[in-house]
Length: 296
Image (cartoon, rainbow, N blue to C red):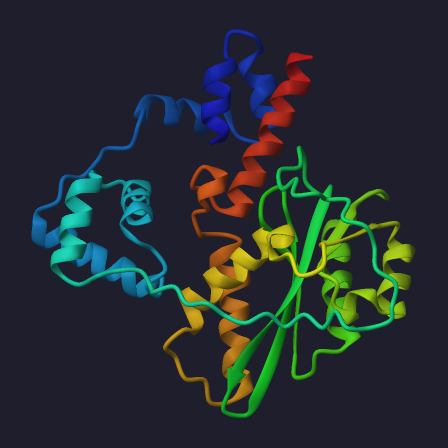
């Protein structure tokens, strides 16, 4: 991607200067330029089906035909939507089925609640402007686990999370602490959550004040006010949890870590990000900022 930016700006800036800013070598750029677009390998139907099956197993059934096409193309293979759809349909390969889940919000408390400052504005212009929070439940044979996440709305990255056997205030303060130490946002960041008692607790409110974070809460009984985070839980459960029996809690913890840190943030194509992973989207945005500074 860095080479592509250099290629677009070669008339405006010196090649050496751009390579230095983007931390790539001149020789690497020239080699990329000579190679052009990667060769697309034409596969037979049998080869294509084998590759689709391998990717389906590797990604644990997360992708339907649309994302499968993009994944094949990203790996250097020629793949049309019609061909991939047909092969998947004829061979019973499909993404995990969606399933509805009940909410876990306990809003029947006497703690103070905040106004809905977010007001359905789910597209901030930069990272660390709006973080959304939520909690979901996960069943194992050893009992319930509760997963709290912090989502940066800019690139939909899970920047903080916590998994505990009890849904108490420390689950959200721990997730917030992880997010803050990872990102170190400037004061003024907005936090948005539902009206759950964990978020309204004095311990969590004190932590927000310590980090200089503005507080926003959904309207009572309105799940759409925190739709991106609800959508994340839906994807996680569809792609890793539904239809699987987890015996020890440790197994669920391992699956949650793998999904968040290895797959979702770094690899999973996100439709609202132009089918890029959250970290890839953020990296591309940062490169664009470098280029804009050069132009200015």
